[in-house]
Length: 130
Image 1 (cartoon, rainbow, N blue to C red):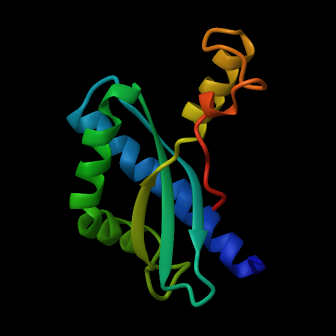
Image 2: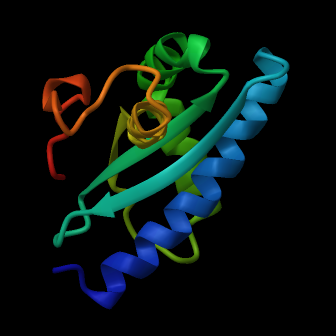
């Protein structure tokens, strides 16, 4: 169960991270949209799991690798932005948000493009609950 403080910090991080990542993508890769879909902060406020979504999807592995490699500079930029709201910047862990892929799979299954998922449940990928 997340506390109000965790939710507030997650909201601040989500807003500022979206801005930082989008600005970096604009400078380096034109036509790429990066959005921060979700941020989970641990109860001790030391760790933050950041879920990102990338469009077009073809570039998401490259983008995620680049974001992970530059996580220390992203954390530094975030610390400068949030210095008045946070005493200590949490460690940032980045993950790809696959919910759009999952929705797309369901949508195509409902249209009958991949067969009937009711008769063959293996058509839809299994999702782990987070």
